[in-house]
Length: 62
Image (cartoon, rainbow, N blue to C red; front, side):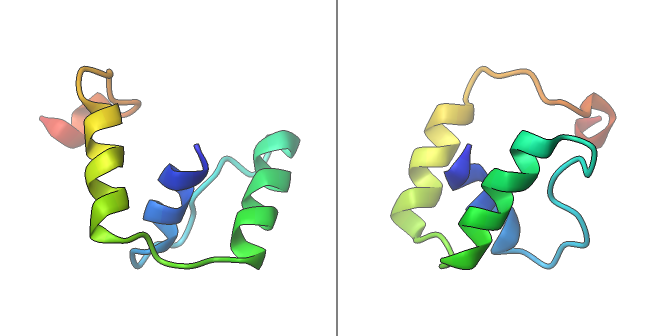
């Protein structure tokens, strides 16, 4: 989850987490405090972990 958030923060975005989830909010603050963009190797790991998973927003992939 942290690697995915770092991937998101490595791109030009306006929102990365649902603002109503306190646990995700705490995790995001911790990740952001020591933020470093992900490396190409880390992105490859993340892509492998994502294989076969259902997207949260299916219309984005239509």
